[in-house]
Length: 311
Ligand code: DHB
Image (tube, rainbow, N blue to C red):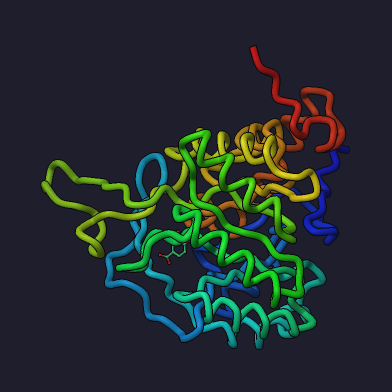
């Protein structure tokens, strides 16, 4: 039997796969469906200080090789994700992670402080890379701001804290981001958020496919897997070994997950494929990864983790 058990921030996970903060994790009903599924964690939609409707529709579009979205952080507000914690724990013993995406540093501070006191929340993922809030830059593309945010939030976050990072494309940027993160008490990074501000066009109709921001939105799915693998690999190389790396971006098959494992990912999240396929994707991905590892003679993710060969 191949063993896919892993752990994040010392919290045991039953398998290597869980949902990305993004699709189908906003309402209690959706979170309960995740609790009942093979997802190793229940991860919430990124929460803001106040509830938000998000951007005008259509704001999500499935594409042949992925998806494009400009949701604009629709969510029920952070207090609801705190209220849901004990309700989820009635249904499942699996961990509950809450994603936080304040529009200002003061909001992130307040939310992280409050959520840190909720017993049934196991970890927090601070999203510093939402590309879709109109007029707001992605914090992690501004290293001065990143430095300030990490310095401040460390004072209030009392649960294991992860950072959802945007994709980087330049080795100097990877090094600068990693050197900032290495100075702080961060349990894990999640690489990568969607590739921001892509543009998808329907040539027949000569029109964009989503409404907000003139059609620009975050690209996800198979299109971005090589970028996600590069980010996992590079951060694994540059971060202190105590900081774990979670991969996300184009995990659609067990073999995709195997590639993230070779790059050193401690777990992977599933976004676009979960949106397209629903909760049954988690059992399928587990079966596929186990079969692929079995065929190669591996018993445990530790046999493969970080073992990518170079030429
Ligand atoms: C949204 C998109 C993201 O990529 C993200 O990290 C958070 C929120 C959104 O538009 O809702």
